[in-house]
Image (tube, rainbow, N blue to C red; front, side, top):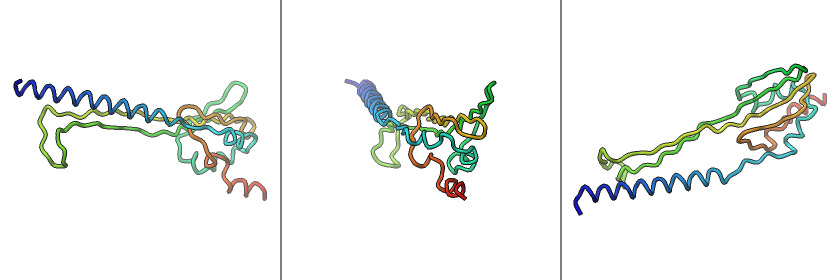
Length: 152
């Protein structure tokens, strides 16, 4: 076998390994399903829109809103981040080693977004309906500061 065939075989094996690693990474990423808890959704029903306007998490997220013909305001606090991953051959086992021009890097990226949808009427939250890739916990509920101030 000549050197060119050896190099082609190595590149093919590397490509197969890279595809396998990317597939495993994708399966692992998809295996961790987000959890939306009902108690987090219920915590917003009937709450003043002031709690939403002053909520530390939602104040940081870009907000888009619209109003239906019946007067219901719909707010979307879109919270997302970019996810990128690279798999590289580089043909080097130590940092700083030289690689050939035939070596390559495969990268993929995507944007993961949770659309925190709030339905509001007469300054009260009717419903909180997160859509997309969302996780909820006590951090998305009305904050203790608001609850405390409301009782005064």
